[in-house]
View (spheres, rainbow, N blue to C red):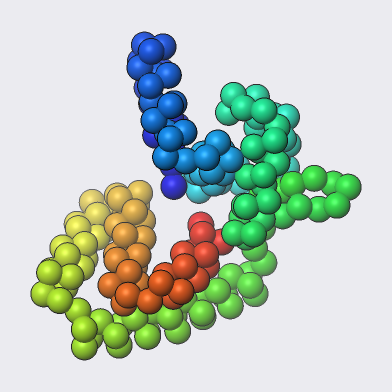
Amino acid sequence: MTTELAHAPASLSPSVQASATISMLQNHSLTGAVQQEIERLINVGELGPGDKLTEAALAERLGVSRGPVREAFRVLEEAGLVQLEKNRGVFVRLIPLEEALEIFDLRAMMEAHVGSTLATNATEQQLSYLKSLVLQMESAVKTEDEATYYRLNIEFHEAMVSYAGNQKLISLYRKLTRELS
């Protein structure tokens, strides 16, 4: 959920940075790139629940006009990551405990279906990949590497849902996961 531009080292020459920017924009709309970067900032905790987001500040930070930021806010609101409050502004969404528990219940039901589907339809290659992720997660637990465990856990569940082959399920699962991120 990050853009190539967000991870380009500042030490790159201007022509290489421009090439990276052009490449990124060929693959993503400017609004999409802004949306991905704001989402990344939320996911890594730079923008936390309840934080007010201002178009002008984010536009300046990202080096874009306010229009793509405004459009990104709309997309992020639909995804459940930000909340637009009339006459107050845009805020990183704070999910109440009750709603979080409801989302976890929905995910549990979805994962039960996915598990049932994979129990009868998973290929040996898919099972091997899932087992490798479990082993990597166990290693991360032993070394107390929370960041790696978290990343692998997301990758594990994403792979399972993807292997079920139901595009609507994948879309809904990702939406629920993004809301809790």
